Image (cartoon, rainbow, N blue to C red):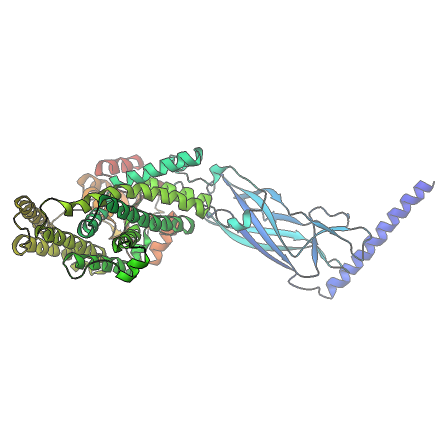
Length: 600
């Protein structure tokens, strides 16, 4: 009997408490409770998502001082749990959610402690994307249902919302993780395949690095750097290296090796920093050469070095600095700073391997790991130039040294001046830029052939200089003669361009190029000028996106949309408006035709 009475008493007490709670809440609400109790901000873990993949969701909640919200599992039945949800959306589904650990507080209106959150907290969620989602931008509305209380009263249940923009990627789009500072302490995981770049065939560089240990990855990346020397992007480094070391270096083999090593380290440092910034920021690899001031600085470095070749001054540090450096000659410092500059010159060297490494480092979102990978890559890229530096330095140590060595210096001086002109060409007006370098070559070749008498009595070198001068003059004449070379009928992308990639009958070709990009010029000269390629291209919309200097808003939009890492990048988009092929680096006409034929 006593048991029955106790149950009735407990039930009656619960009813009374609930009734009091309802009245107090109603009265407080009528008085207009405090505003801005909750500040909410939602974050996504990926810059874009692929159909059928997953991404993480983080929600940072700021709770006003002296207030709290109930945990997701409050102790009292009459208290409303906090819950993270998303508004109903056919493209997204919240698969899982995680909450921080609550803590217990004892308040005046409850005899028992309550499970609550206070101050700033972060919730997490795992969202699944529909397999049928089309490329484009979508709104995802994140909702937090909660009940706020202070030491005296609980407010009616409420909700807070925030909207984030989710970008659905195409087949060839690359995905990278973002907002990692927010997500690092949230206990959520998804398969790495969801954040891995995917296209028609999985990225082999990403797969190779992901599936091997650190040591094997370092070896692979080093070999990849060596392989970059087979691409046209390294052409400017050859005359620069020969010109600098051939004209400046004197001394023992040991000194030559040390200078070459410092040159390599300088180049690797700059290249590594550029690589990491590119991977983590989404910038264009080599984009420093879009900056007018950087181009002028590089040109001035070459001009300064070339003047020393003509005897204007001797390139070395002041004696006071040399003494402070323990007697080391200025050539060491010059070689190191020359290498720093050459890291910028080497940066446009991209291709499938570099593109894969950029994507891999971006997915890892670890700048230290990224620096290591790009440093090893640049060591592989620069190793042949260490050897070339030593070889070039030995030229001045040939037997029977004499007046003819001045002719060697003059040749190297003209090479360095030519490189300065090459780098400032994008800054000159188009009608003028096509003639500057050939005219300079004519003048330099004529001077060496007719006016430079510093060959001395070394017959072999005199013959070499005559042949070299004739070759330079012939190349200049060939470059000046107008040619009727045909090309694909490109439409330049400007602010007013009507990009018709959405047409359902034709595919689209977009060529991202820059004037300072040697493989871009090779594509124009050898691939896009092929008669079969031109005929096939008429079945596509064909656009050129100029990334030489500052980008038009339309080009910038395309760069972001297709995640363009470097130039050249040629996109081939099918009639379903999906990226089908992504070509980085040079391909010949025959290979390019294969890509086009597979679509139409």
